[in-house]
Image 1 (cartoon, one colour):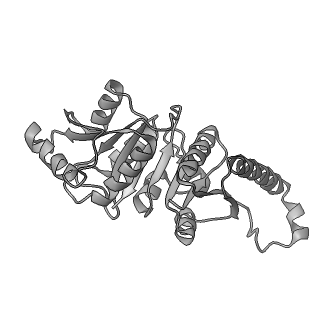
Image 2 (tube, helix red, strand yellow):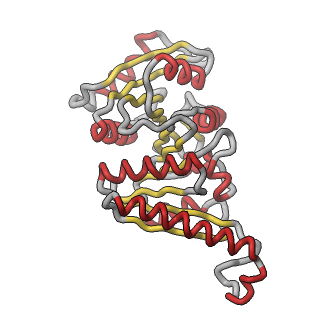
Image 3 (cartoon, helix red, strand yellow):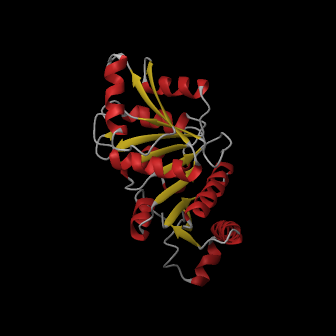
Length: 276
């Protein structure tokens, strides 16, 4: 993991995301990039310096943002990390993804509060859109206190498609953190299987990773995927929820767009989504 992108609007959950990103960057010796967007009333980049004085509120916002970015930069550099900060103006919905693609980030970590989603506040797009379209894993930090290093990671999938590469990313984090991976399959009313049939695809996946020893397998029968995840989280210690996303259609066949929004926006725990 060479570099990590942290979109931020300096809210409490974004601050927690920044702290998590710094800790992960320390584990991987990664460079960390902090990114903040400001919506300006005019094209600020092309605006004449003398005309900037016409927009005192925008100037105040910019000054505050630069100070906050400097503080984040100092926090990272005090941990011995390489860090860059970016302040961009008047952006469209694709700007976070364009920025990440340009710098070839290996990870995106950000904060979100409830159903608003910090990505909506930053650039006009929502969390679900970012995690569905990003070609890199995304961690969204929520209200729950982040426990790091992660010790218990629940990995949720229907295991119907080849998720080998995505699971490798989960294993990589688990190995760094010495975490236990809980592989969870949720039987729903619309997609019901026996316990044995539910466990078979998990067994097939694990055959590709004979070195993995610290794991568990669980099958729940619940009315919906989101309810199943919530039930598991209530019954087991969980530090991170990891899910797989499918680029064009949202989540894999078991998961719908409403599940993406429900889990990512409504869970109080950090949620990691991995594109396949």
